[in-house]
Image (cartoon, rainbow over all chains, first blue to last red; front, side, top):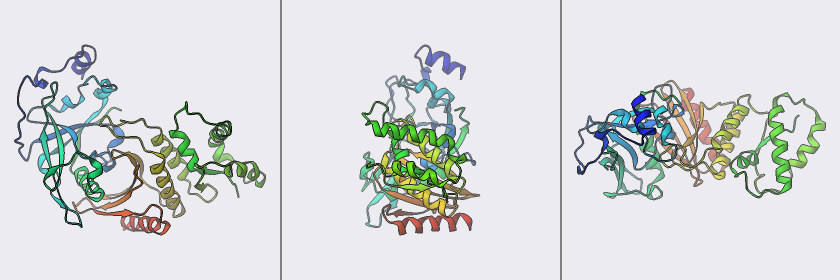
Length: 167
Length: 193
């Protein structure tokens, strides 16, 4: 944490291993690959799970363990407020814990996955994605509310906090 | 009976920006109710209190639509409503992942549910903002979890789950009192079973 504070907040730096450096996206995810995202104390219930209310959907940003250390999600990205991320906690889930396909009562199929979405200063950045009729859907207003709710509940049950937040 | 009341207006005022051009009567209402919050629990059961407060309650305001009487309310309701006020004050992007703060629609629906829960003395475990833009009222007993999520869109969804991966999810028609009461009863039965 001291490294993060001294290098990233005061010098606007980030670990070299986080830099993309021209590397292409890697679409292959193993089922047991870990996915990390940051969390606040308020988001965590007594079982060290992230409460469903705090599960974002779709396109939740995560960092994949193949290219990230857990604490990379706490490295400030220069955005307003990101300097406080070093006090946040870290939650993790696995690729295999991403909910399976859900079909609405009207027969519309939804499926879910994770896509590697490298950023220049965060190569491990990925997104939990949703697909409607097989096509990626980024507009949450076009996703069935019941599907959204089920997904968030199921993902919440599969998420664990691995670093307790300080705030 | 005391006529002191928590209202939807209280909640909505919290989300108004401070520089909003409130009229003078509205500022008086804000001040009156800020002071009232501080002394709420110590107020005597004095009928003479009714007249000025009823005048406040009857003030013409589109925000003044719902009332939760504290005279018959459960003891936990005051703290829960304060928590709702805290949630109402969140800025946009409060979660750093782009969530929008709860709006007046979500807060009003949440308050309706809290009123119903209060009448049953069924205390929720938590009140949280929703990462999907709204307010979430949740309940937990052991591995049994349930919530009512009131979205900014006006949609309200409920879920019950025992953690086995088979959650029950349904939509609640927020404008329907019967629907609201049935949902609360269903959740209470599930959590307490």
